Length: 137
Image (cartoon, rainbow, N blue to C red):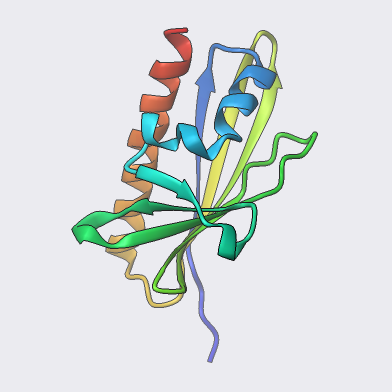
């Protein structure tokens, strides 16, 4: 059986230098400042790049992060109960004195179109909070 899954790319311009935005975003401890992620903590049993956070309905959510890199890549996977429920592919692109952030998500197998569209709305809301936070510095 062949599945056709949707993909969606969101773009936000942040009026801050790319290195500054990357430094902030590459630190998982900062997630609680601009996303739903609360009470984050490193999960040493799962590896250096895995943090867990309080999710909705009291569930723990694990976020698996891309290793820091010189290309401003910030990919991640979100898992609940060991199953990947969301994958995000984020890039920071230098744009003069500012930064263009692109975030692409691919619909996960079993996720309805409505669920995928709702996740995109949540991500865009988070990105707007990030933009406001970064530009207030």
